[in-house]
Length: 132
Image (tube, rainbow, N blue to C red; front, side, top):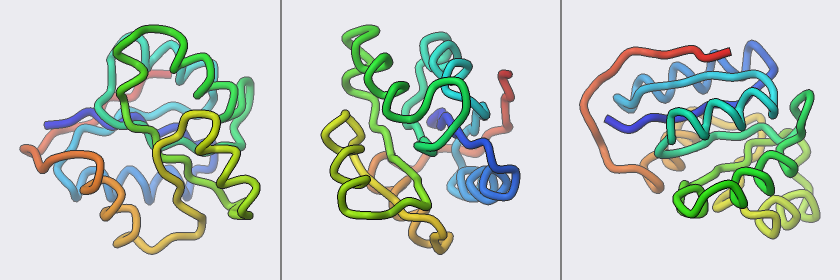
């Protein structure tokens, strides 16, 4: 089973992402701000990160920059930026900053599932760990 860190401050968006990750049989780990996400990511070494770009304390771009610089392994963890500000400049900035993919909100569950499948293999079912 893969560990998926979901970084999202909107409860409805978090709930949707959480359900989809569980449906895909991966282990969700959730945080609601960038600073906590950075600490959690370093501690649990997720296999995939689903990252809202507009989060408190440390925005998504700041998170990606610090995370990618933290350790060699962090350079290889796929990060999918998830944002309601789906303009071409925002998408380009996310990809230039170090995100591997971009998903515009609102999205259909099938779109999120496709992103997860693209970046992770299918694994066995798991529970959830909430850190923060």
